[in-house]
Image (cartoon, rainbow, N blue to C red; front, side, top):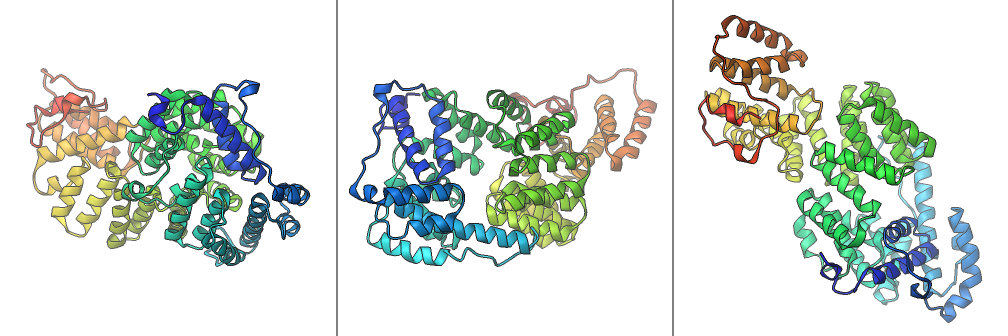
Length: 563
């Protein structure tokens, strides 16, 4: 794909490199470090420019000259996180750069005081009413400037952040879109907007500028909205356009594969990323999730020790250590490290969700519910938190509650069999068997067929569920897995498919609740096995595209569909 197809406004990679260099300088001057870092990593992935191709410095106005001394001293205080002191010396400055830093210093001062008060007075699960006291004043002042049309792209971005913090979400979306039009190359504004987009319809309704950075935003949004196929295509287009060396794109592709549970592919990309950038900490918490799922204790231990050596007080480091202790079944220690992560960043989505999982393991359902709800407050698109709440209320035997949360999880992950299994169970417990049958069948796992004496349909659905679970490489202790294996073992035994029945029985022995039944079935098989045996199939091999099952199949034809 040619760069011209990505962007009609810019001609080639040289122009993009120039724009990145310019916006890096602008962000650094205003203390927008994360946006500067993102643009710098992207610029690093492109070829260097010769000296005569470097972009000129931004124009220097008379107001800039008047405020130069005050801005210089205030920026030095700002860099040392003395925000009140920086704001004091910027009072009365007229230049746009000084005005932004003045307002931004006041905002960060309020945020710092709020975080300090939260950490000092509240535990991580307590729902405090601590607020940034500066927000309302900032909104009033920025609103006047906004109505007068005196805000530039950076200050519009700050105004949007203030509105979002005050839960004025509709207004903040409009302001972020305005900020993006005023300054399309500021990635921070795009990222803030992405946190407010709730579905694909809302995304399509946004009026966004047609520039190359929009493709990065769309790829990011597709990943967030679980539209992984579209996200991967976008990232591949960006790689083809000239960003093949971008570690940001590699990390995002790895996260996309993680989201669709393609664990091996995601692990390969994260290992590639660590080879290119061995001191990188960003996204390493996601990498540790993959190692956890694969039960790779030595690799997870090495990652945790490595990150501690780099920076033990990063949020991602605490999450990795928490995963390590969780894998060792030391759930109290794991929860402690997730709490540390939340003290460092109370809006860390992964830490809230993982802490909820740990409290579930410790049978502390009340704390688990609080943790999952905090995760949803941070990001309503986190299907894991909705699913976790459903599981918690299922333990509490509150089926109407768990049905609500499972529905939310299913809306976010419509093709995930785990969500459909959970929905089917909830409907079944509420005696809504017709609705339950729809959900279980859609999830390739239909216990309702058993009750309705539809043994072939039940076997087919159980079989596809087992394929889905084992093909993703997860080490699971789900009760549904052992139930499926038990049923399939008996089904194959009744239909004299002894090899398949034996394989299912052997797998049953891996689960505590099915071990005795598996052993009993193996004894039965050894007693009645005929001399002529039916050719066996690999139950857990991936299903090919030609093996799509029909609704009703005979027992003999099931062999060809065995996953």
